[in-house]
Image (cartoon, rainbow, N blue to C red; front, side):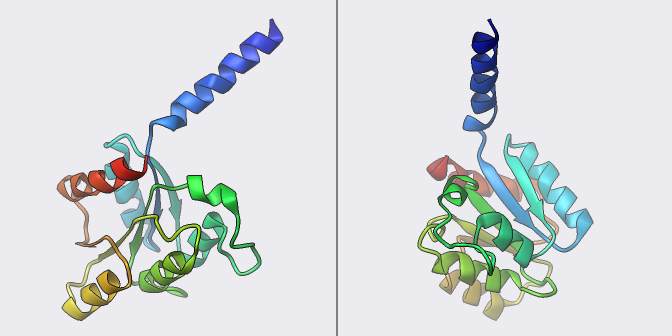
Length: 153
């Protein structure tokens, strides 16, 4: 009986996360992180947050003391959404590191900023960002992300 009940518990865990797209939201501002998390959860996304680019890289298995061939990280996230202006590592630098990774380069990255600077926007898009969004994000902005989540999930 124990074996049967534990296997059904495992099945439920897989079902809980199997259909939900997983988004890594990176922002140094706690209020902005909470807002992004709430908006994404309204669209049935599983959300992991990081307060800066270095933490995001660690989570993705791309930290300085981690192997870049960390296979588990491939299935970890369907989308990365990151603030542009952060201390230590900008969203642009995070984007570049993700796109340089042979394992994670296909994961869509969306950059957000409260500043509408065309040269910054173009630089991010040229480096491989899927989209550039102005903060604060709204529910209508998150709707635009759904197409990226569907392709990967």
